[in-house]
Amino acid sequence: MTTEHDVDLKYLNQLLVDRMRVKRRPVAITYCKDGPPEGYTPTDTVACAIVRLAEEGQRVYVDAAHHDCWVGQYHLGLLDKPDPFISKGEYLTMAQGFFTEEGARRNKEQSLSLPAGTINALAAAPLDEVPEGVQVDLLVCICNSQQAMQIAGAASVREGTFPHGELGPSACSSIFAAPWHTQNSVFALGDGGGRAFNRVAVGEMFISIPRHHFRYIIELVENFRIDPQKMREVIMPSHAPDRKAQ
Image (cartoon, rainbow, N blue to C red; front, side, top):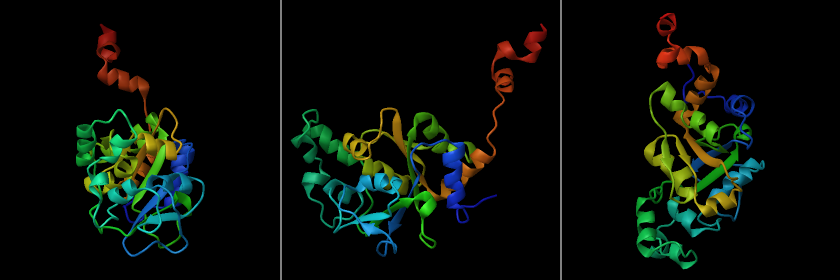
């Protein structure tokens, strides 16, 4: 049986693309504790958009000096003293008429963030082009709901762990911080900004899979088999063999 430590990332990518038929390129995310990996370049963009840049074939990272979103910095734990304007959600009411002050405050209270100092950079690369020796902590992919059900749900059919779902938090919180806190696969719709920056189409969502669940995706695909007739026989009284014989 494959373990979390010996997963072949190129093979995993092949299964996702050729067998699961994901249309968008799977992305490898690295929590950097000692600086970005060699060969990755800084990018002054919003944190969640490193997913789209990696889909395009780039190896990039954001850190405290290279970014273009205070919200992403806050949820990645890269701000030593977060401004309450961000951490309390006040910013949400400034340019969005539908947020009440109470709704904005509670949004941030319920959103997950990496503890300050957990990482000093967040790096992203195409899953099949990760340099040797670079630790991969998350697999992030933008896909349709059918694919999300199967990929994010792989652990549920192999070890019985249901995935964690998110609707409401910022995309950077859902896809980068939630898997760290829950130690679980995550599926998330993301927020308006996160969807726009990543050009997420109607019907698509984010999935974020922690490394220890990678092997379950491989096991699911390698063992994927469905017998519709047998399934009907075992769960539907009208299709049970003994019923037909009556």
